[in-house]
Image 1 (cartoon, protein in one colour):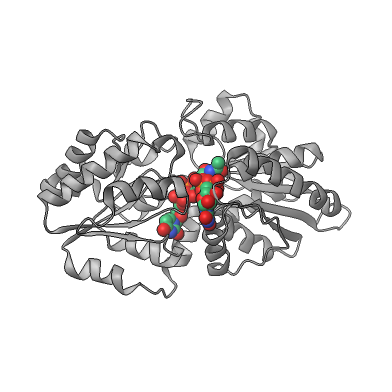
Image 2 (image 1 turned 180 degrees about the vertical axis):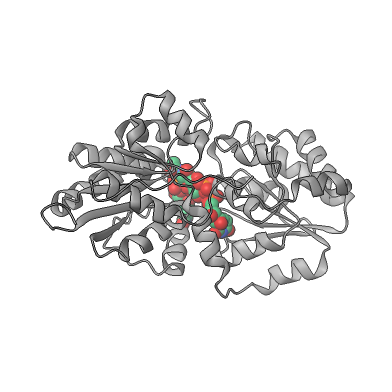
Length: 387
Ligand code: UD1
Ligand code: UDP
């Protein structure tokens, strides 16, 4: 309650699969608080990939902007989200809006709140590569969201330090861990269904690699290189298979089609629902990805993760030894995958369950920090990973 005894009205905005996964524990926590009135807006920058997460976590959005269009570009999403939020923010007049991460929904949500002079809380603040176009457009989305935000929920000490270097008031930064780990722990407890084709991949092959790719800066030659490398790997290792849930972005799909379609022991699937996906990850030998969220989840499951990017804003897992940044060069990818397949020692060195990104309590810290911001309680203790 505020000093006048009113509830704090918090409006959460998200639009893509990873934002929904990371927001879900926060929304659950908000809904459990008697002193908070929670509202949820989905921009639906993603549609099917968003809806399955919203259903899995039983989130009931109050507003749906229905933004997604096939093959949309950055201008389309930015304009539609901004326009769609105007009326909602004017009617709801929340005390705070929450955005998560680095998508166009994140940045545009923060911008819309700024135009309405509503304070902004940014979950997963302070991740940086310091390279304007890598990842694109996420690095700039994060930087710009930081400028617009009033409360910064940094997942790690490193991200807090990045914010401090940019002159953010230390009193408005809270090191909370990342709610992706809250979501993972909660979801691993739930029953799940595996498609028979996916079960077959595990039954018929000794070692299964989980692959995902979708970064805009990897479209074209970089993805072609990665897929060619993996064809070579499969040729050399008859006991190895690849499960590849292909992102809905048509630009990604056309890349995949030209190199991996019909290749033996490549199991191409639609994006998996979140529960089967994390359970597939739990059963795989290793993970290859350019995803942000998967870089955070795989270490928690003790899965070596090779990161198909030139730079990452998530270097913590590499420091703990479970992740390696390998880029997309064909030869390099092939060598790095072969190394983990051929060298048991190298594999075991990476296959440690570590949690640099969270301990499952991030959502609770975030809400405590919000209350602290409104003068309604003490600051939460910082998250710190077990060494
Ligand atoms: C977006 C985010 C990226 C995030 C990723 C997570 C931006 C600019 N990009 O990238 O930061 O890492 O989501 O997955 O915010 N599509 C569907 N159905 C869906 C989702 C997407 O058909 O459920 C197709 C549509 O044709 C759509 C296209 O994918 O136009 C691209 O979606 P978009 O959200 O613009 O970009 P992503 O590459 O998904
Ligand atoms: N994920 C999923 N099904 C899939 C692939 C990924 O549920 O087929 C989940 C995964 O567990 C992670 C999130 O989606 O939490 C990552 O989303 P994505 O890679 O699309 O975006 P990024 O994290 O790179 O922004």
